[in-house]
Amino acid sequence: MCGIVGYIGNKKASPILINGLLRLEYRGYDSAGIATVEEEKISVMKNKGRVNNLNDLEGINNLKGTIGIAHTRWATHGKPSKENSHPHMDNSNSFAVVHNGIIENYQELRKKLTDKGYEFLSETDTEVIPNLIHYYYKKENDVLKAISRACKKLKGSYAIEVLSKYEPDKMIIARKDSPLVVGKGNGENYIASDIPAILSYTKDFYFLDDNEIVELTRDSITFYNQELEQIRKRVKVIDWGAAAAEKDGYDDFMLKEIHEQPNAIRETIGAKLDNGKIELEDLNFSKEYLESLNKIYIVACGTAMHAGLVAKTIIEKLCKIPTEVDIASEFRYREPLIDEKTLAIYISQSGETADTIAALKLAKSKGAKTIAISNVIGSSITREADYSIYTHAGPEIAVASTKAYTSQVVLLSVLAIYFAEVLESSEDKLINKLKKAILELPAQVEEILKDVSSIKRFAKKIYKETDMFFLGRGTDYAVALEGSLKLKEISYIHSESYAAGELKHGPIALIENGITVVSIITNKDLMDKSLSNIQEVITRGAKIMMVTNQEMDNKNFDCIINIPKTNPLISPILSVVPLQVLAYYISKEKGLDVDKPRNLAKSVTVE
Ligand code: AGP
Image (cartoon, rainbow, N blue to C red; front, side, top):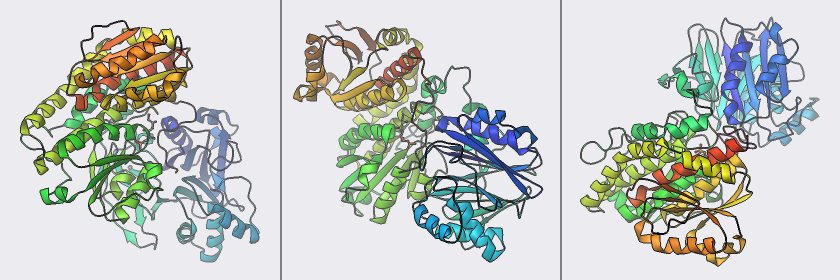
């Protein structure tokens, strides 16, 4: 997904911009570019391909400007090419713009501008922005006013940075539905779409809200609303160390993040389970309110949605409130039945996933209370929701989510207990057992990760395969879905996940000699039935990797991973770990880029 970096100060801007873009590489992109301004002249350097290739462009070292904007593009409108990459200039080369998001009415704007004599050199939606700014500049003779007027004409989402030759000592930025932060320095200021890009330069951040415009000089940051009335914003101190965003000696971010899970879970639990009933900072639901609910929706995408599937079982069991889980991009368009008796929970690691944010806005508009669960403080979703609670997993850089998933399931379990305690809907004994089990999780994940040699060996054996199956019942099925997604994402092996009992209703036709089936069995009550399903595939020649915490008489599996016992409601937090490790080592065996799988982006900010 596109990334933005900006700098205004006294140092040469280009190395700072390129360094920032390198830190955003994990988001996925296909081209990169920068622009700096010097003596009322804007210079643009851009190309298709990697950020590092920018260093090879002729003249890049001659850019002496101390103000600059930069961008990594993930193609939406128009193929990856030099012409389509950002920054884009207006026809008079007076304004340079980088843009994240999608301008939905760009065709209409392009036509209007073309009728007025403007020409377009790219296939992008973005190119209308600098030209629209130029169009209004001719009327206003004021850069800020021109940008504000242009923004009012844009439909869709945008985070933009604008350089202008008319005001070469200023930079203007604006946002709507696409993230943008300002990092405050001393005699210099930084801009980024994501905090890690500039975290090594400052810890003081301002988070822009929708329809805000900011004018930056080296020594000042002035915030405006769309009417250009000055507004005040609070600085937030971000205490992630810059090293937290680095690899810490691991080969890849994904492996590092898999190993960070014990700590991420610990941090997410924090002091929430320490004494008596759970209190969650931002939440103060009354028993009457929770009793009035006729439904809880959990809405998210991808891995976050899989975390929601686990939570459904926990909430229904502890709180006795019907809970539906939905894919955010589907939820919006199926006219879900929402009213003030609905509570809607949205899960998003990044807090910037466009589909999830749009689904949240929908529920809000229909009177439901909304809770955001995110890993990023101040992210867009947390600013939209009525209430926000945070996983404390630290920055997750690898595209394939690992520690965010386990932290999300932990936090959702804590949330379910919180509801149950307010509702008095579950026996204390059950609640206390579950709390104790949650507190044991970090050490249990550590135990699983201590020795992964048999998973590594199994990965070596099967990495050339083209199809695999993941089977489970109950919460083990939710884990099967997540295991299968991890494998697809980073190893490019086709895989299917099924509720084990469903196999005989069709998919078993695909089971043939030698195919690999990963089985997850962590619930004693479901073990016999699950084992019968596995026997059915063994009979048809399948190789089995078994992930279990149960004692089994038949150990006739190709690989068996014994994990610690826990309450079946939260067993996914343990059983997913071997599946993450399996996907990781298969990808490594295949020599793939684990952290940046093809076609994927870390933060999906388009719908
Ligand atoms: C996970 O491995 C994926 N890369 C993806 O499914 C991700 O979970 C999804 O895009 C949602 O992201 P979010 O949590 O940042 O909203």
